[in-house]
Length: 349
Image (cartoon, rainbow, N blue to C red; front, side):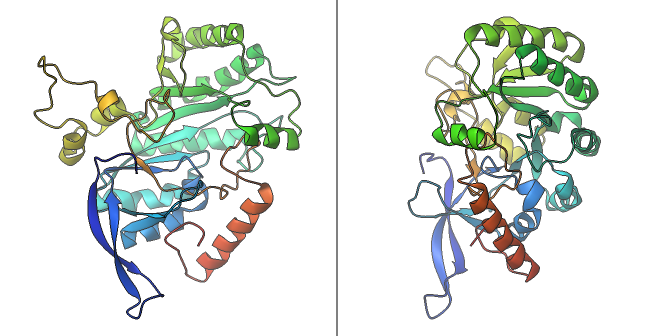
């Protein structure tokens, strides 16, 4: 692991290859856990997550190979959930509250219904209602609206995209405090281009500099009535003239605002006595920057526990699915295991 700030703990896990059937392994014990950039665990794998939380650990496998990493929840104080449909997960929130964990949601709420880019998400109206219901349950400061990614096609112009953002924002602005968006990266990810072409998304492309300026100015005007904190995810450009900051989804500012009562979390985020030579406090975003993310990403460090090729939303622009056939096969295996009462230490064993 590139991040060296997590404590290591000894963990006893099942191992059928040894006579005792158990072994002791070294696990990382992160304070903040991301659930997950790689797949929609709240939508599809809530049962697995709650079972693994009870067991106290997961085993994470990198999509790029290498040895698996054991991740212990022994010191975890906060879960950051990423989802396009957290409705199936809502019944589990009482358990998280009872166990004393903090959590917030990064709720991706796009409108690409006409283009069918997000094949298996619920209808937009239902997703908006879920957003509002979740906000009423946990508070608007703990539900972040993501419109991610922004995509242009032969039929989606900047003006059309702003209209879609406006229709959603007018309904949910009272139920959130933050909006994060990103401009699609297509040429950087061969898999994204391949998936978009296979889905028939004609003319899907990235934004020009002029189109970025047009979108950001339109969003600035919309936000005059919404009053949200706006930020752009993994964006190298300075968009401050539009009232748009640099994105931080795993957010220091959100945590220190919404979870200031959690002394253990605050000790991790703001340790006492940490000062620069001139007596000033270092920028926490730099001290805690997640080294596993892109240079333009300002997220603070967390450990993601997701697994590639498991998200059944099957979005056309997804970088984390190898193929729809692989995802369906993995999900079918998961359902079969779940229905027999078996939950592996990874989503799909």
